Image 1: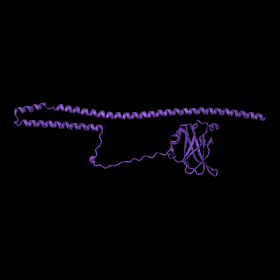
Image 2: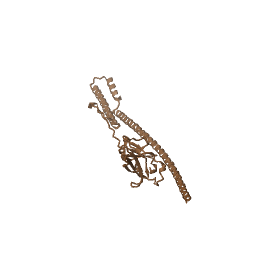
Image 3: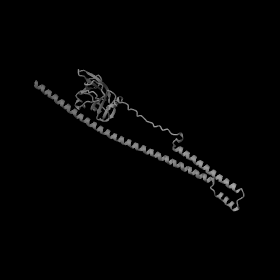
Image 4: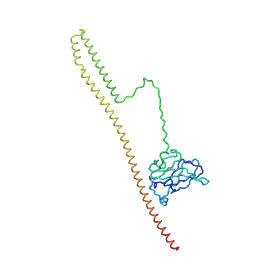
Length: 305
């Protein structure tokens, strides 16, 4: 942002006497004479925003100021009924350090401290960042519910739940082995009484041989445990995939926002180039008019002789 981009000045929350007239002056340096003076607007009670007229391009070249400057001095004056002019604000502004507020309707007077100047340009409205009020911190409300301690349980994570299932599988395996051992003991105790006939004894012994071996059942339980672990890993990978897709969607939205900002910047640059060409043409026209005026003065002077 340069001095030539300045379109309008807006005063917000100005501290001045009521029924006075406000106007501003622009200076190249704090000690230099003003190269631009605005019209006077009345100060009314309760009014918080004061907008002066837009700065016309015709005022841009007659004073010989370098309008590619990156800063200037702004003074706001209040002219009272008795003719005295009191300084209300005195700002030295460096345009590259200003904070952009958005367009004309993206701000309100409640956002600023007392005595603030807004600078409207083709690129938006700007002001000093230190004059913007900090946003109030949002209050967080908590809901407290009293529950018996017996009904409260900690939540489980994937790793903790997998460990719990492994322990449950180990307990089930020990219980099944204990049941098998108990049945073995009962069969041995039943056969050692000697009251069983020969055929029944052979049937009992054959049933003992057909029982599942503890080793094979242990391998089966181990396989089930591995299956459960793989299942939980798959679930965790599915959750990670969902989070990655969410991040990808956010990155796509950010990319679309950056592309829109890039197009907006190109449009602003094009508008700036058009404005620069228009001002150059205006300058050429003004120089030609000056030349014609000088020639006319020379002719008049010669005729007077």
